[in-house]
Image (cartoon, rainbow, N blue to C red; front, side, top):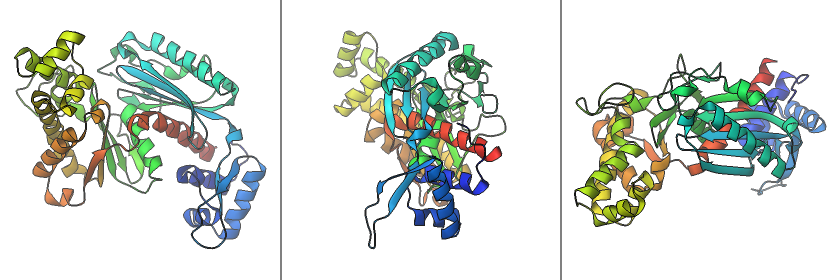
Length: 398
């Protein structure tokens, strides 16, 4: 997308409309701190250029009905990619982040960047074809990956779960098929962007914690994702919770990731099954050959005592780690996502109990801990937010 020729005020209007996810002219003037006449003039120009469009009317609250403005769908589409340790999702999104087409499937990031990104490019083309679109109509591409990312270069840096990806040029790889700009970030930062957009930036300081194959944390500070000096902010999975605990793949001992993430939950449940502590887990293990986080969640929801104890232990350890982070950062909300969100309320209750017991009273006075409202779509929507946000920022810098 070529944003050249836009004035500063017009770029600001586009940014406000994107983050508002549909807004009236009056509300836009208030949000942008422009006079009504200046805002209306900028909107009229953007409508003429085909950058904004009217998408219908708001539910009236008195007075005449107000037309809702949104980014024009004639601009093209965004591509969002959410990669996890064991699966991936690719989606085509409109500029206002409506999902037009998407596909998810199992994948193993340990296969390396070549085969995984090749598959992602194939899916991009297939989904674009479903939408009757082509590569030239792609505004920007956003990708979330499960490892520390140097945001400026778009490259992973010593990623523990995917060592073959270290310093691999993802942008160049995707660039073999697409000329649109490619933006890459850590998967939990991307999830945090998704929640920030969902709430229209109304929350300024919150955390998004992903508990799946690994454990990571996206930090939103003063309404912006905080990445730290080198892109590793939020790598909370390697906070020690049991000093004499098992060795983690990072080389240290007792990290919360090795004790409470999905593989640890599955391992504890397998041990309980083999020790005769649960007929249900033992039956699952015999039928399926191995236990996964989803199996433990299923047993827990069915009321299996051993599965419940495993879930509670994991939640307590995650809460122990989070208590330190809450004391340090004092967020208003903690949103928990990833595979563990399918477990149900027991895990969340264990996290809350541990955090409230271990954190300072002032830090938890108004703290809200819940599962991510976007659920399984947090990564995909967040990747779309990343693509559109950074594309607009490039416009501001132009």
